[in-house]
Image (cartoon, rainbow, N blue to C red; front, side, top):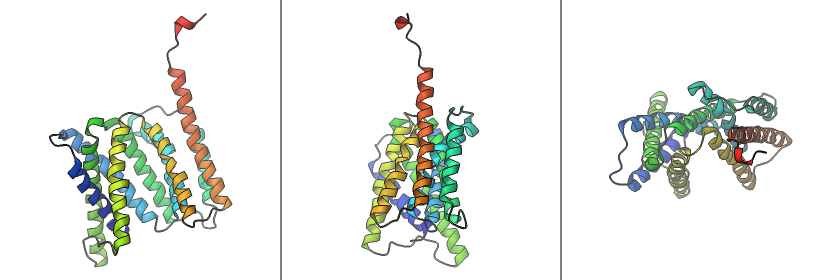
Length: 271
């Protein structure tokens, strides 16, 4: 399916599911609703970019580059809110840059798919930083609903603009067969509605950097899935992937060390 069409179906059905299961009598404040639209704009931009990018690159490369949000998120927090970056952020950026260089060593360097995926990671890093500040766990379903509906609206606009430019239908095309419908339903109900509720609930309880580190499970799982479905691992992918995972470890290790340094000293145990 065309990228924007797939995003429109995925998030449209996801928003419908969240509307059905939302709790009656729970209404968002106007401020939280506006924040949900902003969050949906950042999230939708990332999904449109990544879905477009995946037509130019493979799943393994996409997964590793998406994992870069663990390094981008602290930088986004500093730029948006002047949150002090962790001491290990700069070394992590250097290791990540080495990983990206290793992944790009294939003649022509980075192609459009890789650049678009990195742009998507930047959008998601901004989304994580904002969600960590704005999320309220008691409104997880409602906030997820506003975000998914906003992403669907963005995708519909992209479909309409593409139709006007190319002289095609301004509406998303229907999934072609039963297998495609099953894929769309999986993406809509499990990977969108379910994931967004969990993310909106969980992000209210942790920092954006910590959430980004946890989300780096995606590269490992996506790489294993791609390999199981017939993907191939070359030395370049292995080296680049290990360097990116190393950057993610540095951010997490630095965060834990900084957290321990801030713990108050128990004076009663001092000699």
